[in-house]
Length: 301
Ligand SMILES: [Zn+2]
Ligand SMILES: [Zn+2]
Image (tube, rainbow, N blue to C red; front, side, top):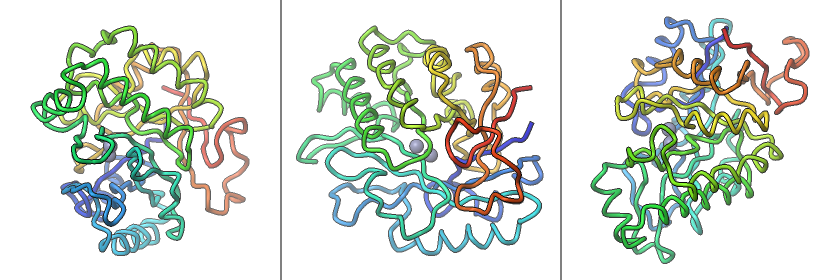
């Protein structure tokens, strides 16, 4: 099986290693494809202050570094240029096409933030637990189900607006709430999650099975949970496996567990990205003819 990771952060945003270090390590670890997905710069003057996004004035350098790696590693490992773009209600989203001039190979659409309408208050659902608890108190009077509903509403709006290839960590909102792990979330949450699935299928969006929280030791399960994966399998929604790597140590981290949960959930295959914008003539016909452009199927071992 070909191993790939399209969800990777470097020192350009909040990762620990450089583009070059990640390429070298991915090659040594036997990955066939490596994609870079820096946290895309937030719009200038958005009103949101962040330490973990790629600053706007480093975007060109990031693009150049990945393009350089693409040339240098050609023939050994396929390198792809991407961005992880935030959907923030009323502020920005992957559908804005703010980065279309950069000839990106792919983009990941993610919801991290919940905000007050006037942006006088905002927080990330995957931040430190005390910030999450404070945020739920501030925005939802301590009602966790209401916070989850707001999160899922944002994910749904992002899917509807489109403009991205991969849905990032679909159920990120569970991270700080152990009561929701192991598919123990309340019925309203499960219903909200399930409602997205036909829309995802119609949009041809690939959902990542993200091992990032397992790699960081914060949670012992993938995004999405097994329960969501089972429902996704019913809709035959294509999935790919990503490490959400913030260091070389995370590349390919916990992929065996991801494969295991996929198989238990009814998946026999995943898709791997081979590049949309590239000349595919020498690569033979796309195996995944009924699926998204630029992806090939890979049978699970
Ligand atoms: Zn993310
Ligand atoms: Zn990420």
